[in-house]
Image 1 (cartoon, one colour):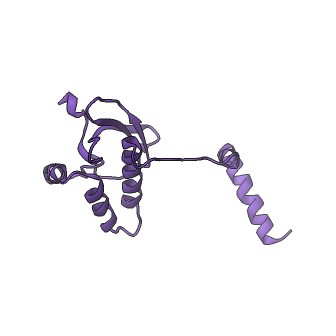
Image 2: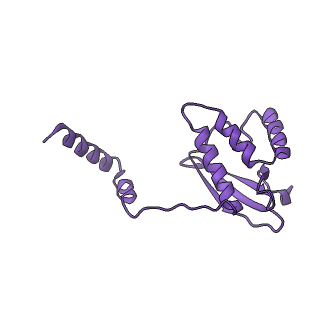
Image 3: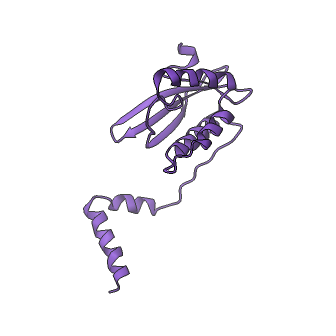
Length: 153
């Protein structure tokens, strides 16, 4: 038996022993699809949070991409308010935290005059928080991030 084959078998035995076998098998199943539509505000909010969290998780620590994403997705007038909040709270205003979540989910919360989405940020296996993000229908820009939506202020 070659050393490469032995290493693969050892890794497989360790995965099963650690309870990871089901995870490995599930990912080997049918391919997953993720879609989006730039004209759909829920897709735009999901795109923003996905890209923003990826950029913030970058081990190289480049601050250019999160700044560019903010400029592209957030209305300039709200970006000023967000930056003021960050100065007061000493936290990231997009995530409302000082760290980066390990997972995120965006759910349409439905409103008549603008798009409102619930963002569920998962920090660990047992910890998650929810934010409300509001986006205009006309300019497709984020106009509010908080624990309540614009209608709940």
